[in-house]
Length: 430
Image (cartoon, rainbow, N blue to C red; front, side):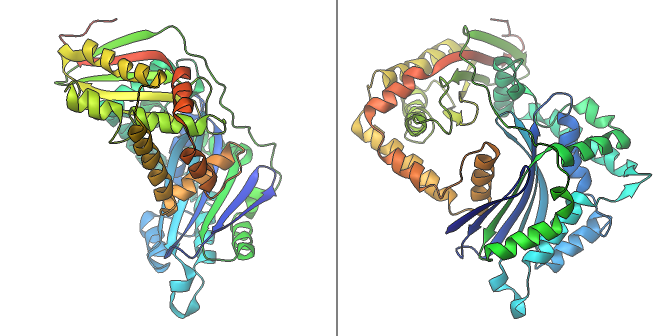
């Protein structure tokens, strides 16, 4: 795989992973802006409304026919949160040119279609169509309100809201349901124009095409985005120290309790020298099937239905998520914290360390076998000003992590907030 990076204009970058490994090519355009309460709903709604139709293909039926004509390409919008930024992406997965009939070019028409969907929407009275905005606003409101149906996800969501209150990180990347329902087409149009002008723009291509050809196809398709840009936004995530530990308890109509615990990693994030040790520490603690939380708290002690930990490498957070009986909240919490204490003191075996390293390395290598995950990794790094690479440097660093480094990483991890979701009759605020 050969990697090529190029600045196309102020705040506009193109990243190319040239590889013949896949039968499909991946092309994406990502617009990144700060995640803010007052713009989150509009920014989340824009890609869905754009996807309803462009001037040349003004409805989903004709848009679908256009992707079918490109050997059944898949084209779709995505809203992602990366640190304290909100990303609007359009991703197009299309057959690699070398598999097309008669040597037909697929890259150029795919890029052109992506450009049309993003930059040339179907309009009515100088703004978005009312029915498209109303329909997609209702769909977005449904998605926001449906969050609560997944109690595991909901407990993590609420933990983050409480733990990061007042920080941009706590803003819902999908926005507010009521605002989505009442969104006016002309207001959304203004926000759309603002997004095009001020976003940091990242183009990504993975596939076998020559870099010069990719650059030409992207510049041709997205020409309006390149001209007259204001200085792009900077994407930064201020590190927050852990505060005094708070416990938040809420009651809902549930039969199983959810215990979510939020930790700060002591400022260790993706670009930190200690990051490889933190990743292995997380795998050892709760981020793999051989982890302490899984084998001890869940299997041996039978205190949880599930228990795992995950990192946000941009924000510097670790979240432990578990499902418990209402009567077991205190014991489960104690056991979860005790496992972390043991890691802080270096009380783990070489076999456990080796299993954690293997788990991390396999995960990182697995990402290189997926066009979507490679796109996600490269775009994330570019948004935060990191140089994308082929992942081998991190793999080598992970393989060199020592027991002492893991213990030191664990010592920096500090508990911040505990969230308990319990049954209505058990609920009381801690």
